[in-house]
Length: 343
Image (cartoon, rainbow, N blue to C red; front, side, top):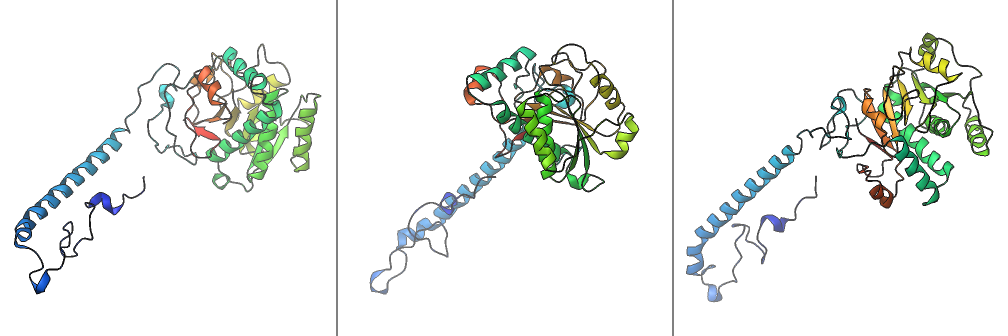
């Protein structure tokens, strides 16, 4: 809602008004103790009052039209190619979500672009080469976005334990690095994360991320609980940070077994960028069904198959020129937020 209009908006500008007749100028005092108003002004007073009443009626009508116009913006947007599917409709105005999630879905542009695998890789390469972002810089921003989206969808106060126990499963690539950063921020947000990181790359960046988590007393599991029931008993949420948009080919061990266990969970799964095991463009082929999806930079085509409750966009770092070049049509992030709720 905008700021209140100044008083001059409601009443005509001019010299100080008479308390007895708003909108009528106070006359100069008559000389020699004569009448306070000249006869021709006294005759015009009823007409001035009628003009003021007509002005106020017109103002009320304009305000009524404004309310009607605001209400008309609540109409649902027709589905278009590249937009969220019918099961996850976007709205032109903020609306409450019946499933909770800590905030209403945001104002969304139905023309937001869903990227193919090739397009996603091209955007990443340009961020690194043309714009000189570093891998660890983007990883930090992405991981913070993931932790923020989780905190909005599953705030600690809504969980049954304090602090809420979260299992973060990290893969060997950059998606796993996002998961390590996410776990660190979740700890700062009041959660109790535990990390399972079975395939650790021998690179300084990932070694540093592990050290940062260890220094914050975040435990690492030596092996993953083999049964879904055990995970359901120990944790209230599982973060899937195994494979990202660059993954191709068949899923190998130990991740094949891990995904099989995750497929049997009853606690919610939050997937980072791509639900692990999904085809980046075609979507799900009978694998895990996350409750929360956090798309990074821009949604990927597989996100059109997502049927969970919460879909957030994270990674508020795309330069405007790059967004324009690839016609990403990203929605406006509210205020200083680093995530945007799409569904």
